[in-house]
Length: 248
Image 1: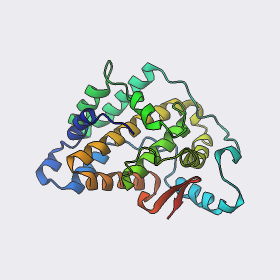
Image 2: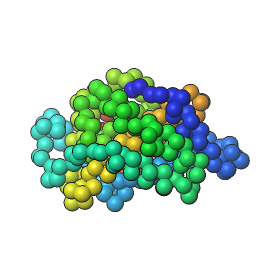
Image 3: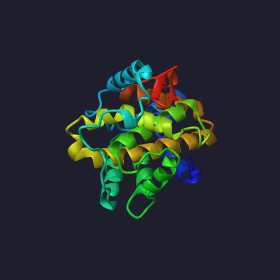
């Protein structure tokens, strides 16, 4: 997974520049403030217990077949979409608008890096996808990539080849029904997909910057809390297999 450290260092330091964090210098508090600004973009589409149930179903069916995406029932709604430059710009602006109240410095940093005429986050996202077999413009693939990134951060997996195609496709097979089964995806696939892509890029960039800034442990705790809040999953208690997430 390639990263542009200097680019994301600017973003990370700006996101951490809250008065409370500066005053107390507590790693836990710093990451709590940082993660409060990572919007729960799938809220209302995915119940936080659904992913846990998907893993339970996956574990129960281990001996019934290979459990690959190719052998599972087809989803009811397509999650593929065609992005546009305007949609990507709107995705960044929406993210910036969410940050303005709670973290003006963070909002300004994100806008200065990813705003109109600036760096295109989709370029880094394509690099992240390399070797996973996941598609670039599909909301289910984007959710799978986002969740894998969370797992990678929690376990500090720095080997870019550690996530194999079967692993990535296994996660996609777990999450795709959660999105495709929701009628909202008929109109929101593009919005959700692009927000997840931006989210993934920011989480990965923050991780790489945290490693170099000596804040890895705090960042891991913050990302762990984020996924517990979003999906009710303690990522430290899961492993990645060819069938996706499974309990250790």
